[in-house]
Image (cartoon, rainbow, N blue to C red; front, top):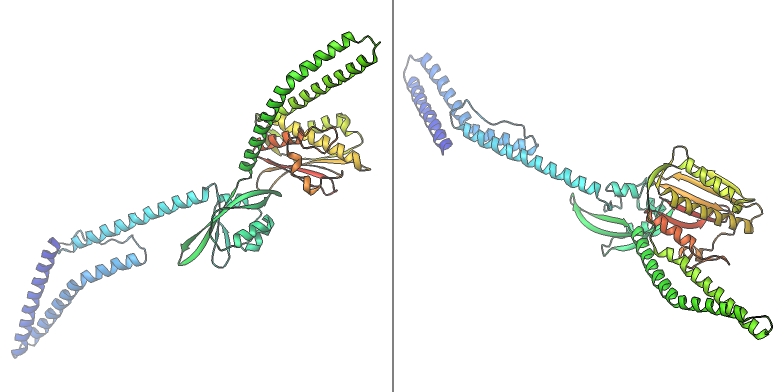
Length: 445
């Protein structure tokens, strides 16, 4: 209201001054001999008109400048008139307050955008953004870590992670999450893929979330196997304990009464002693499987891979399993491993012995190799390869199951325990064919 009152007062006296000067000009024009007065009156009248015009247009000018500031995003403009007592000081302050609010809102939105961008970039789930033309962008750090080898923006560029994965990215439908095979670091695993459609810049885009869940699936599988083994061994040992005790007692009694004179008694003694030995063998067999039901305790630490691998090589060559086997070790300089050195040592020495045994059984020049390398994703890859007969594709997943073995004297414990140890490290182990045609065990840590 103060601005309105001052504006009306300023307008009124300017109109009054215009009327006075106009009357003076009219008087001068109607009176002869007042040439100079006419000129002065005309200049005064023009000045008053200009002042009145500028006074009226001043509000429009300030509003136009305010709108231009908003249009071009220039929130640094100042509209205050601290030395002006005409009423425009109030409107200037109001416009300044509006600019200040807009500036604060811009800062708030910028902070919110930075926050949401940081949340999106640091989200643990890999996010891929696909536009209507099929262009694919890696949306956050998790995606760049997971798809480290990716160098293109087309759907076909994702074929190196598996045909099924590339096909899932190309599907336009948005539905429930699906399990899709995904190959990373050369190791196949399972990922959960889901998609959502969002609007951006007037167009539709799909956001695809990729969450590898192989570790969780492995943990559930190991837990189920451990529970099954624990129940089976418990029940078998409860049933076999009295049988073993009675068989050993019967064998002792038969040994006391067998004088060697009665052939029937001798035969009965031999049968009972065989039964006792087999009962003890079953108990030992079942006892050996009880260790599978206990999760290994991991004591991780960072250690130099080269020196540690040299100790592994020395132990392998000192064992009888390495006789006649060509052994090759490859470790990059400066490579460090973050793992339990004792458990990992036991896993690898067992894999090397198995590899040597397989190579000796079929190759004229048996050879075994142990290779360490750093992957593009920053993880460590360990490979044990031989030139033996290899493992058929149909059995490559079964070799890690408890009780499964292809050896005549095998127990089916070694590889199952090795898998437990690697999974406890949050790593992976798989079996493939080596370049020489034998088996290749690949560990990712």
